[in-house]
Length: 322
Image 1: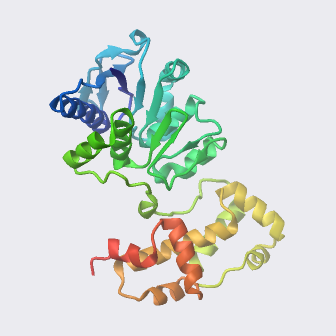
Image 2: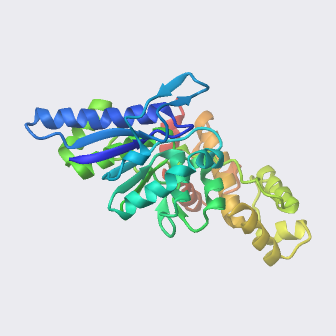
Image 3: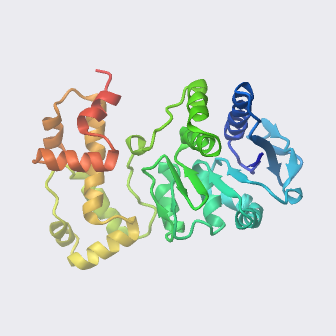
């Protein structure tokens, strides 16, 4: 039987705990109905005998205290609310235990912002991970030695799993179900919970707002210039000249401050502007392309698809009700 430990974190998202527990419980029922043994033994594990959440609106009582769990097969780190770093600090006492369980052969799965706690353990160093796209820039800043693939819904590498934003944890749970049981049970579980089983990208849901949580005033001005001038054909050399710095210095400072090259940032801004027009407007793809400063259809389509995971036409069909 697979021992599953769901951590009752401080600042945890209650639904993440409830949904994870429910999924594994239903899989146990499905397996029993198929004449097979229940595969999962699920426990809520906490540091204290009860955890109050949402200013006392919710109270969760763990089944067992962390100190009493000496062995488990699978550790679930649920989503956390609020400031990601503050939430990680509140739960730092879990880190050593998670590391020990992994060293002893357990697998570890983080949901959404729970990736910050998994990253804090050091287990992800040099590996891939995903998290909620809204926290991606912050994650990259504090954990530069982890390869964040925030366009992905889930990642799996060396017994370490992660999921993207909010409801992406359903895809992670289904992935774990399939890994620990079989495809047939995973499909049955997906149908029961009405979840798209094989969703792999969260790129279409990402909203680019620019990374301005840095202290380089010149680069902030350059970012604002790009965001206001996205309809023009922007040239890195000209932008650098506009702010009286050499291109090399400008590119170096821009990458350090935003963690994007200037060219990448321009593409992200133009694509975000195009997304908004495709969501609410009636313009043709070509009209939108020209409005955001592209003149070549193939180039526009390639950049748009690389960033969003969808073609401009597919994106419009998905979001534009008109």
